[in-house]
View (spheres, rainbow over the protein chains, first blue to last red):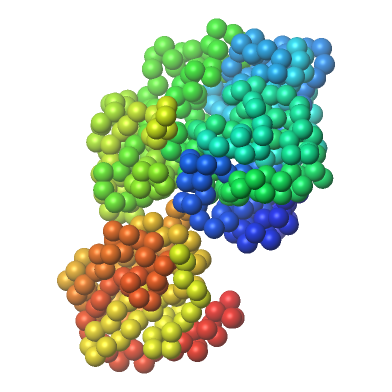
Length: 342
Length: 131
């Protein structure tokens, strides 16, 4: 049996009575009190997540920019120093090895924040990068009041170094909840003090359960569920993060698929009756659910699924096989949940 | 608000963390405090159909939290005479009051002798301690 790794905040989570579960080789808090309450805190005020399990790869030195341009799907020429970009690491088949955020520290100086479960495959594909994950703890502070609560000003998809509540941090205007907010990178030893200071500002500790429902409501894909090495960005609706005019791993496959149109596509759907869709459930008309949950904001079952071309359009009726019971749903435009002020 | 941990003495228990309140030839069924706590906030109740039959030790429905699905195991055999519509509409009632408003189904017993095979509160508490 493999020992689960613990973040520098493990003791804090245990002291708060969090329910700790194995996730990508880490022992992580899935919830502190209630997934629904934590989810609503992020939508309505502010929540903080320990995402220190996520990986960090660093690549600096002459040729770094060119190296990454040839391997990541998005165009790094679209961002300047101090800016961040959502991008994909693709394989020769055009499949998605990982989705990640690239932080451009300088012309030839990048930090990549990647999914915990994919650090090894990412590092294998980006063999010139250095795995600096052990040097970082990462907290995501998210919600409409998050930045004010902790006294941070940061524009979306920008970053800088700075002091947050007494801790020296990399402050980034990123997150994965669909809300305003930031991610704070700091030295592992500093993480407990930063965590305590954030909670003192009335920010609600939130587990990975709420993180999953938050991202699903706004249709951000989860690697391992909605995207994988066997699914392409074109199928996943992530063509916007692919600069098909440049050369990168698998680009030929993606160009062809974009021109011909994919046979299947990732769509969002909402249940028409009381039932909660789950990953792996079959759809009678064709396709399979890749993520499903109750939407805490809408109070109904929601999900994403790969379906054949004929079922792409919004309002298309689907019948989800919920453990032998057919339950009706319909395709909706992404995102499933929209902020009232957006 | 989540209920305080308790296992009332007037109930009978099944080792799959379900309880039965037996009154004459009918029984009210639900899940124990331990079961609702393990599951977390309950957000969906898939009940059996009224008039249908349930068999001892077999699933008669499901409850779901945001993350998980759990089968409801019937402690006794019988015919479903009532489904708790309050829980269908507001599943979190099971967390708030697992032995009261959070009951799940009422059945008419087809084999009342089965009651003798169930655990009393003391034996059920013992079972939880051993887990």
